[in-house]
Image (cartoon, rainbow, N blue to C red; front, side):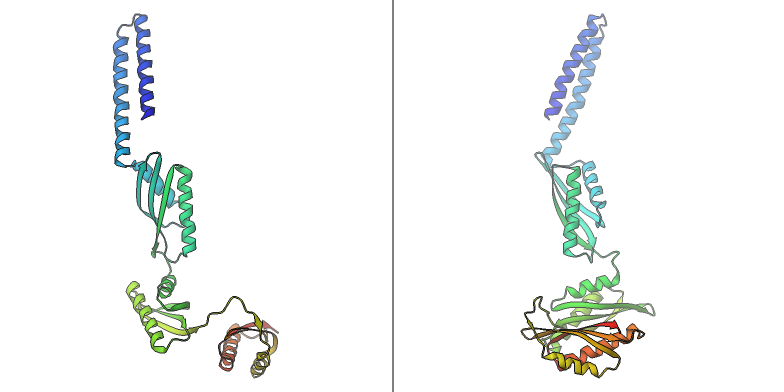
Length: 305
C-alpha cells in the first residue's frame, strides 16, 4: 500500500510538472493531456491497491504463487505428487500447508528428509514463507512385494517379515512370506496374527488370490554381549563332525546374554559345491545345533576350503 501511495504522489507530481512545461511552450492542450494521463494513472493504481488490499483482508493468495509452490514441491526429489496447498498471508509472512504423496514403502526417516527438502526449496524461492508439510503414502508405482511387506509389518504382533515371493498361476496372483512372531506365544495366537495378515492383504490388494504365511519364532538378539561362553564349543564341533562336506571348522564365537546364546561359526566347504548345496547344509547344521542348544541364535559363515 505504501508503495502504491508513493507511486501515486510521484506520478501526479511528474504529470503536473510535464503539463506546466508544455503550457509554457505554448502547447495549451498539454494540460488536458496531462490531466487525462494523471487520471488514468490514478485509476490503474487505485484498482491495484484495492485488489491487493482485498487479498490481504480475505487471506487470499494469488493463483500464480500457489502454482509456483506446487511446481517447486513437485520438482523435489522423492515427491510423487503434490495434493492440497492451503496458503494465507498474515502481515509479511505467507503461511503454506502442503500435502505431498510419497512412495508407500518410503521409511519414516526418508519421508522426513523429503519433507525437509520441500520446505527448504520453497523457502529458497519465497523467503518469507512459513511451511507445514504433511506426507501420505502412494502405492501407485510400488512393487507388489513392497506393498505386502508394509501390510504385514503393520499387523500387531509381527516382529519381522522376510522371504516375500509372489507368482502368477492361471491369471491369479499368489504370495508366500515368512513372518516372525514372539517365540513365547502359543500356536492359536500366532495363527490369529497370520489370519489378520491374510485378511489385510486380500482387502488391500484384491489381485492377490491367496497368501501363504510361514510362521517363525523371533528371538531378540541384544546389541551387547558381556560374557563369552566356551563350554558349547566342543558340542558344536561334535555336531559338525557328522557332516563330511564340512572340511574345516574355523572360528567359533559363542557369546551369552542372560538366557540367549549367540553363536557365530566359520565353516569351510569344498569350493566346487553349489551355493544351493552349501545353503542346505548350513541350514541343517543350524537346525541341529538349535535342537541341542536351546535359546541359541546361530549364524554359519561358509567359505571355500
